[in-house]
Image (tube, rainbow, N blue to C red; front, side):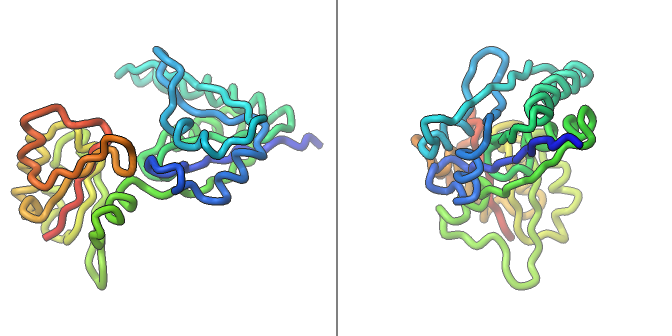
Length: 235
C-alpha cells in the first residue's frame, strides 16, 4: 500500500513575521517542498516573504502561478493544474506545505487548492494549520474589541459593494469588511445606510511597512486605497 505524503495548508498571518505560529514554523522547515501562489507575471509571494525569516537553509520553495482572468473555466483549470503539481509531490511520499496569508480557511487561496486537490487526488492527506487573520491583527493593533457578550459579528467582503451589509445590517452589531479597496463609495454608502459609518475605522498594511490608520472613511474616496485595506465598524 502506497504511503502518500501529506499537504499542510499553512496560515502565515497578516504580515508581521512574529505572528506565525510555532506549529507553522516547524512544519515549514520539515516539509520537503513549500508551495506558494504567485501571479503569472512575476515570481513574488507576500506569504513567502512573511515566513522567510523563519526558513532553515534547506527549505525548497516553488511558485504556483495563476493568470488573472474573469474566465471561470480558465481559472478552474489553473487551480487544477497547480493541484496536480502538488499531488505529484505527495504521490512521491513527500510532504508539502502551501503558504497563504492570514488564515487558510478565511478568504484564502488555499480554499481553492483544497477543492482542486480533492478532485485530482481524492486520497490526499491534508492538514490545515490556522493562522492569525488580518482583522484580528487590526483589532489588536487598534485595541478595539471585535465583539462581546451576546453581540453579533459579520465578516464580509467589500469586493462587490455593500449589498450584503445592507441586507443584514439591522441584526448585526459589529462588522469586519475585508477587501475594502474596491467599490469604496458604494461600501461607504452601505455603512451609512446600515448605521455603522460613524463608528468605523480603516487600516491598511496592518503590521507591515507603510501601515496606515484611516479614521475618516470619506478620505478613501479621494484616492486609490491600498489592496490590503479593511474596515472595522460597529453601532
